[in-house]
Length: 231
Figure 1 (tube, helix red, strand yellow):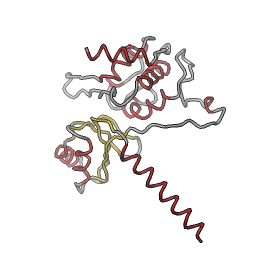
Figure 2 (cartoon, one colour):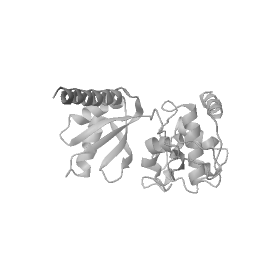
Figure 3 (tube, one colour):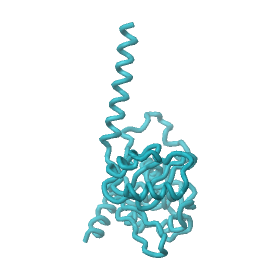
Figure 4 (cartoon, one colour):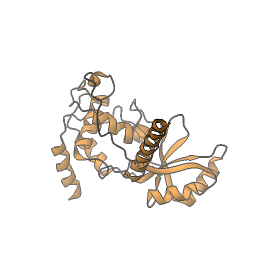
């Protein structure tokens, strides 16, 4: 009995640790994840969103009804306002969670599609796919054909076919601001959310997966691009 009780305490402690880790994690400064209650009309959702400080929808999680929305102000405050509305099932900041270890399976790197293996000439790095999955796929899609906006389609884009990946990295760092057409969706900046090495990895992954030839951008290259964009 004592052993079972001790094991239960360990499980509870582990859950609390994971929960506190998630709550303490940094989040994207521009977006919130929200799911509205079922049965609401589009007009009702728009009113709820507008009252809470939601600016526009930028993506979603396929098959779940969850939306990724761009917000005005602190995402945590916007999520709190959304959660107070009966028309919202749940809302939370778009937390940025990173894996702190890779499985010690010696054949881990052979898993197809897990990472950029250099198959397109790029630099192998498992972080590329991890970043793409966490921050990019909801808008750009795994195929490179965006279901959100034609401006977010990567397939055939000049930037992903540039083997230097300079433009890809700059967009990840600084985002884009489109003013036309009127309903154009802009990409948020991720320069503060990811390290130089992570941005280099995702740029190499994108050019290798969607372009003609993979790039070999390094963390040092990205650091230099950051200096240029801040000048």
